[in-house]
Image 1: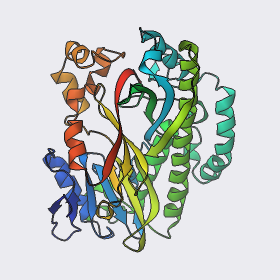
Image 2 (image 1 turned 90 degrees about the vertical axis):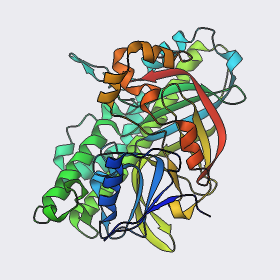
Image 3 (image 1 turned 180 degrees about the vertical axis):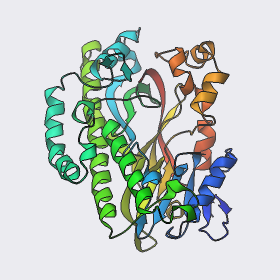
Length: 404
């Protein structure tokens, strides 16, 4: 028996929602209905318990399509996702004062946004490891920019191996046996943003004669076989590769930084996981090859490991997929916001942030109030709602958190 709520849509595909016990905002529900009315939705939409309003399509939704793709459903943080690595360290091996470890990580990984003339979020001169990784990406990037030169002058090479801002983070965590993990969250940075925005605009331009007939202009799509469809598949695939490599470079630098602070020798990489949660790829479901867009959702094929982070100051989970076909083998990508960043900054104070993150070595200032745990859904409720989608392998709690 499947533990989902079924929402029937007039003149649209059904919506199956794994949201029992979790609040779903009315705006998100209406946005799901709009997407379900697109004529190429395959079978049904699958909605994860972290669902909330997004641009184009709802965050926390799985959108299977036949013969078409919606660039705004994938979004502009293409390939955004998580990486985690378990180490041979335990909590007793960490220094008593974790401020030095946090500072070392912050020095090793560019993060944040442009501050005056200095861009904190990119490399001044990329290190050799980044140059080598970019060398593997450069040829594909040239093929894309030969057709779409607007993307060429993006901050791509200098953003490889950098964190970004917003809800992107690097954490040092402890599991249920007090083993130390490194975990991080980021995507394809400026170049992925540029690719996403370009193709959203191209889809809207291609459909300018029909856009008034769409449920929303951000649901503009490319039909399979068209030139822009093929170009987008190539570009989005490259951006997803960039995002995965971006996380790999950051993890290498985080581990190297930790070795400078932690005196005990250690290895890292046991049960390493690197997974997207904003992406599109071809998969086979119910005997049919389809395009599956996961916007704020993680692949949870049977036996597949994934990461579901809680909010800043809350616990996170390493999970194993149960291969639930009704959910297109997916699970949530986190807890999910309950309010906008603007609302959070109006409602909470620095004192609230200090109290909520008392157990974590992290920034506690007004610029991170929008990431306060109370701006997110309760992660335990979210996990209960998707108990038939994944099983918990490890429960992690943060002790260090680096924010952009």
